[in-house]
Image 1 (cartoon, rainbow, N blue to C red):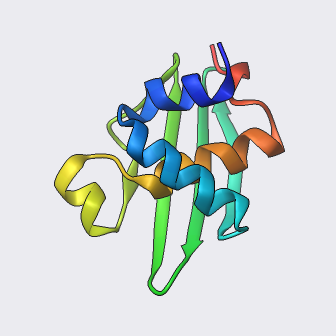
Image 2 (cartoon, rainbow, N blue to C red):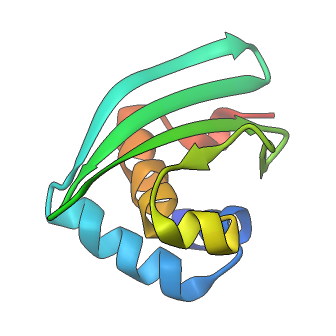
Image 3 (cartoon, rainbow, N blue to C red):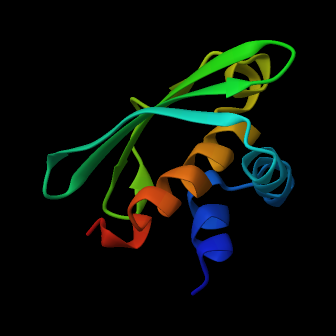
Length: 102
């Protein structure tokens, strides 16, 4: 499985993964925090620098996003996922492989 496929499975919408990948490659994601709360729970906080600033708070465990995961953009509010979540996952993967979560 590629990182793209893994993030697509986590986010659940290929269009958000495509847009998130672009956002990440443009350097518009700032990781504020990337830590393990437990061996099986990773907590990632970030800011997306676009025309508006959106904040992401991701909890990743057991190869899924936990319900505590949030982004304050309107798309996340409407769909429960967004390009900012995908972009943050790409950025976090550069920091420490997201495949490490059991």
